[in-house]
Image (cartoon, rainbow, N blue to C red):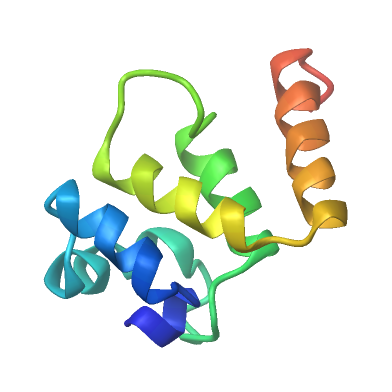
Length: 95
């Protein structure tokens, strides 16, 4: 699952401190894989999560939001900007 989410050992350590280990990643994998193809998680998966669950940067903090934070950290700068623009558009009611 670590490879599926593209998490580094350091990121896994951060998640494990929050009691999110491999079993939880298996459990929550469906939240980030709307097509069921089990490809590596990335930018599009994060946008799909936002559509289903809302802004992962807002409270309350759930385990899936902590996973989102780590996914976000792995994105390149272009994709990070796109995610923030997407969150802004959703907040502004653009769609």
